[in-house]
Length: 296
Image 1 (tube, one colour):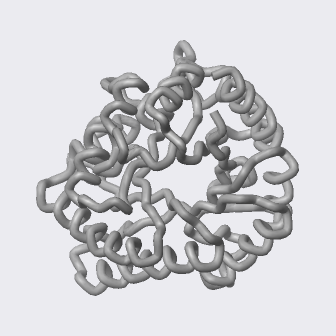
Image 2 (image 1 turned 45 degrees about the vertical axis):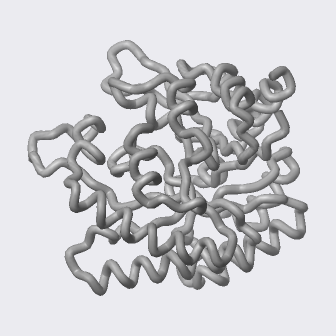
């Protein structure tokens, strides 16, 4: 396998949305020197750079990409307000997402961006927050599905003009939380520019879920991007705990073998959803991923 390997920005964060003392230059240098092909940055600016516009933020990233020879820059952003009752709020968010997409493509040369829609939780007060099977698609109405699809149909029309693709991450608390639901949404949108970012680590947190192989078969040619992360069940713990790519219950050898078997050529992003020395985790997880890819 020779897929590009992307470093998720959470390896370089000190906390969600914070770079701490690191600069964008530091992050791009670390990614390149460690052996990653690119970086997936958040679409929301880190706390330390909130004074910048998104274009200024992207320009700093583009400078780091060029300076250190990274081939791929991805962003993660979407229309969080696509279900807002205020039409003006919805329209402004759609317009802002289109503008970010144009900047990502123009300034950073991005070809794929990770995306998401509106956060949806159950309206039943007693529903447990970690009970992901009760939120997202399970708590959504047909009208909400159509509002989300309509927003992204309009975005897709603009994406076709600039040559950028969006990939919905399978993620808790969205309508695209599970594989079948993510595929349903992209089928409703029905655009060659909109597909799926398969994050089986997120799917793994649901009590009822397809296998890795079943999910990949379901996605077909709508699979644009793949995230790798891992979890382990700890006796007595209330939830599955994040761990290294090689130390959890998801078999990434089987995951990558299946991607190879279906001819997947898109980028593979790896993540560190756990505290500690994340820069060290990045090196270890990358070494493991490259070793697997060389054996498959």
